[in-house]
Image (cartoon, one colour):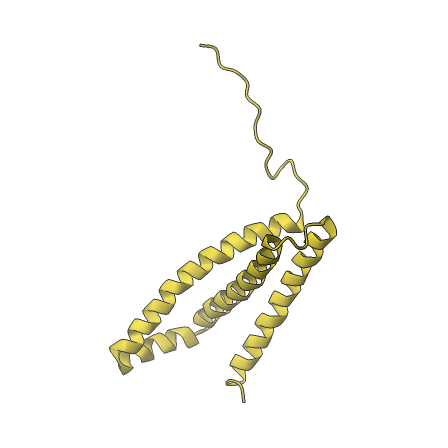
Amino acid sequence: MATRERPLSPHLQVYRWQITMTMSILHRASGVLLALGAFALAFWLLAVAAGGESYARVADCLASPLGRLALFGFSLALVYHLLNGIRHLLWDAGMGFGIPEFYRSGWTVAVLTVVLTAAIWVVVLQGGAA
């Protein structure tokens, strides 16, 4: 049986990079990070339940520069995934299907993610809300 030349699906090298493509990839990646973060949260809860010494070790780990970086990444993924999920819900409701709206909502999610994550960390680093 002779092999036929079949057309290949286009991929990233064919398309011009767009914000919609970036937002889709980041939404999937943030979902994976949140799933991993859920395991870390469960580990933290187990340490709380185990008592003071276990909790102190985990708290020291989270207070380290690497721990804070992980917490920052988790909060960034959480805020992004939430905002982009709201964007998807609006699409499910039939809103924002024009090309300009796709770009506007994408940039809005990107900017709000940075602003809200920064605001959360300003509050956290100042020791909590008043």
